[in-house]
Length: 463
Image 1: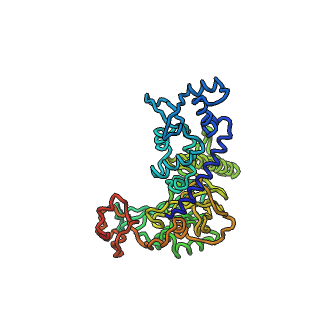
Image 2: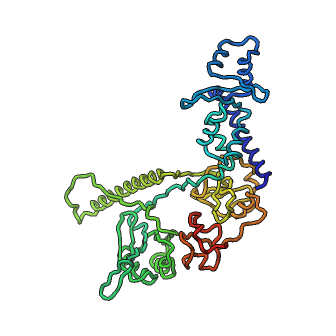
Image 3: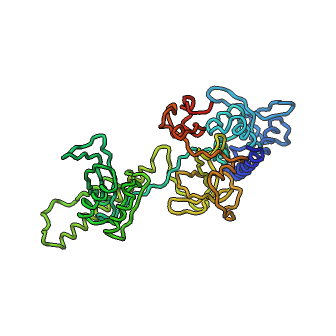
């Protein structure tokens, strides 16, 4: 990393931090916590008794606070003596004009971007007069620390809601190959499971094989022939669902069908266990010949199901937002964010995040504008974090498209691009058999493969 890049980041950090100190110092309630050069010289003149017509109250106050003068390299320095954990310490007083250089030297040069608590401990051994909130804001504005954040944000949860009976069906297959059933000479190894999201009505049947022909035949026999076609047919991206047979079958029943697919089944997104509790006293069964009374009962049941469905959705969202070490964030257009760079797209010494601005919002996806262009792919909140550093570019004038890998290379000032790594493994062992992706492809393991804890035992690496 070049010296010019470090100088640019240091200057941006200094400008943002000194602007905050200026705004904080202008507040009346904070002037007693921050000592500027003028107040520093005033205390020195009172203790050295060089001031004309001194104020007795101020002189008494300064001596009571145990300020004292020390001769260091033939210069008079202001110190303050105070007790901490039964230990008496006499430390030099820091003024606000020197805050940035003191904090930058300890945080960025000597200690390698340590956190708030460690910074406060180091300062308590060296200086007096730097409040904790100043340390917090200094680290908050640090561009390097902003780009090293661990990913803790997660996207907002959108629970699935259904409007009526058979409005949304979800199908999935349950693997029972570990306990096959032999019945009348046929071995059943799979269970097809179809569920109505509104009523939680389940339809299941057994399958011999996980193939499109059997699935399509079972759907037509056990689902469509009894209930007809739902408005939304939801499944994962398995070949047994995403094929011509299934699509033609659904389209033959109704051309208005909407097919939804997910990369992986997400049962936690479904609103489960919606219970209908009747608050009325048990009454006589309604007259089967009275259609008006039957319609009233049906409408009452549907209303209660919808109400309980909303309650379950709210509880699911609250549980999602209370996950440990996770926070649900939603960004708006113009927010400053940092993008998580995949491990395969950066070197071991590169920064793991790329600063940028939200250029456009499309539901749960965000278009990111960085200094080098607009990223090709829109990202979700799980790839973004809030960025508190300085943005030194105009996002309105940037129109060119760029990949995340190319933007990461330019940000870290690499003269050459990373080696194109097509395959990397995540083995936990010695990479000695064909289960290793690299060995199977006749390639050596690289720096992007497996964990550091198993790196030394890998036998498929260059010596």
